Length: 210
Length: 153
Image: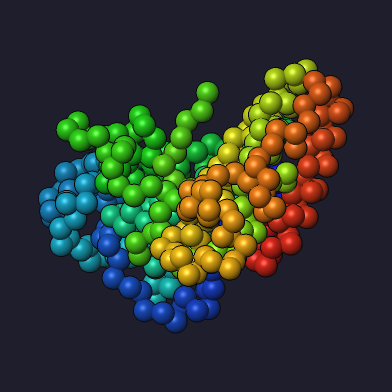
């Protein structure tokens, strides 16, 4: 039973036991080559809002501007397509030295998970790395379950319901992306039409390969 | 009805198999304060709850306890992988191994199989909710006895 249902206190504790992100340390590390390569769009309210599936920039990752953003691109489409302007990882974080510190608004908002597993620059993308994508979903699900239990007890809390939808939207994007490349999460998430992936692959209780 | 998601609620990666730890942790699986008892308790009490909010809450908690059951099972599965007979012989796990090898059978650490007697479902709101309070306190105590001292599940 959850004994601390106050999700406002999340930032004061380790989030999901994964540990607080050390921004001092992060400032000094070289931004590792991310798997993703894209530029953000102009708007940047929440980090994940600029990720509209694929590049977010509207190109098809082969240098051709298709004028709209596709859904999540299959991992085979990640060609060598780097955008010169902006943060190469496509996150919404600003800072000329690409330290990817959170914005003031993001720091204040306790609903936003402070740890975003992903490419290592803090943008939160983990395209193609199934283990990381799964961990992102586990992180969101953890918070989501807290909000669900809170809402069960206090169904009239508008703020909690807003948080629920915020997290749910994030989750749906992550799950869609995961099921496209890594296999189904539920029996009705089998995307492939020629392979029953539900019974394939390691079971969740197996020792993880990496 | 229940949907299964092919992921653990919290990731488990046990690098070093340890049959002694397995013998202690198996109580979280099939013991009186384990996750199986917790999920059966919540999932069965919800039917007779007059307040549907509470019934909904018990449903969600019971479902989450089933997820915790899976985490414990994953921990035990990884604690007992690749064990040789000489690792097991002489440890308390040997008596469990005789009957179940490295299969996962819900028992308490004492070897007593899981028993529904650990659970009380009276159909009375006050009695059932008090049972939940008492069980939760016991669970928290049992889990904090373990070496890890992480936040109880």
